[in-house]
Image 1 (cartoon, rainbow, N blue to C red):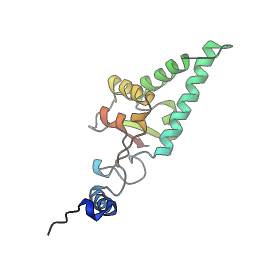
Image 2: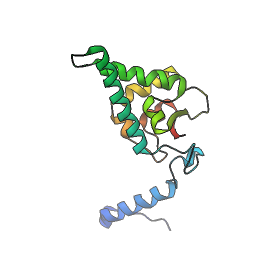
Image 3: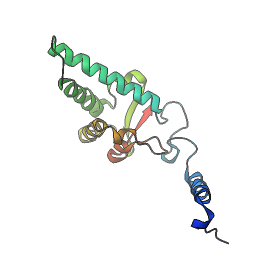
Image 4: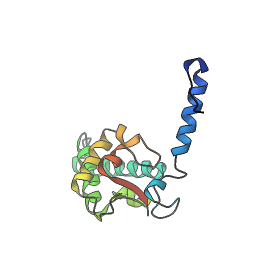
Amino acid sequence: MRKVGSWLDGPKSAFKQAREQANETRPEWRGQKLGLPESGPGAAAPVGRRMAAFLIDIVLAALVAALFTAPDYPQNWSLVAWVVITVVPVTFFGATPGMAAMRIWVARVDGAVMVGPWRAAVRCVLTALIVPAVVWNFDGRSWHDRITGTIVLRR
């Protein structure tokens, strides 16, 4: 017999059914649906490492911009430096300087070698918008990863 809840059962019943359905489709670890290992090299990068890499890139961009604008404040030149520091290395090498320091890299889900310029640029623009970069799914991929067909992995 099929379970059918109603509004008379109350919200606890609806939440319980939703939780049971979510547990049936939820993978055991990030990247499992993509065939990635649970841990070690090639596993989905943890959120902490990704945020640390982003912070390193921001500080590096501010320092680079400050070198060219000293003694004044860098203003928007920091954003320009961050875009260059993000798009160019990810296009060709799959990692920003911050990602390299945190031992993570960007890979295409389809297995191609290079991320490519349009994917790197779209990832950069969506990261600047912040929201697409902080909304995650169970595979450890944020919106900008899913839109560009990429994933961030451990080295």
